[in-house]
Length: 162
Image 1 (cartoon, rainbow, N blue to C red):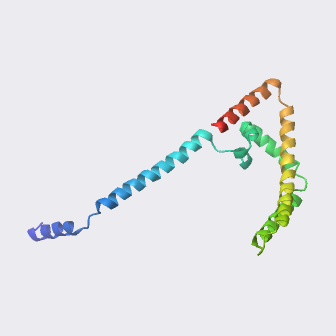
Image 2: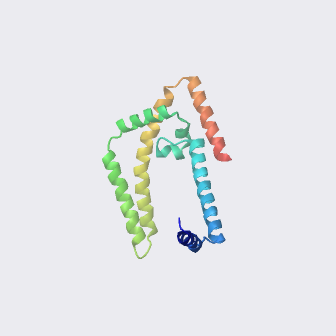
Image 3: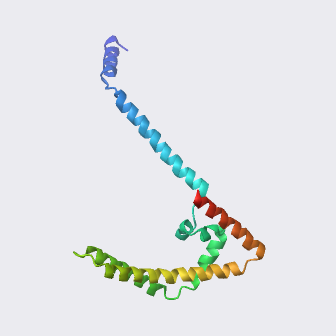
């Protein structure tokens, strides 16, 4: 390597702009926050696991069921969902009415109450089907199995109070 080429390389290296201290600190802080978010989400996932379905996140009774029990009850619900298309159509119609009321120039609280009642009725039918399947499942458990289920439910209810 000649003396001239060494000077060119050294000059190029000196010309490369250095990142300011402020930007370096900002990048390190950003990386730290990203890692913290990943840690929180990962920790929550490993602590609580992923529910089998949406209802499992909200209803403590459903959360107290073992995954295999939830799947079994889900199959029963799907088998006995007569009129599913009708209920879905009723729910869609209720939400369509909610949208109409919300977009009207003047808010009509009576029309909103009516739409909410329609929505509640469609959801109630689905909930009733699930409750019937759950009760049928629980009635098939032995006293010891029901006691274990009660213990799991109690544990979940105590967690919610914290």
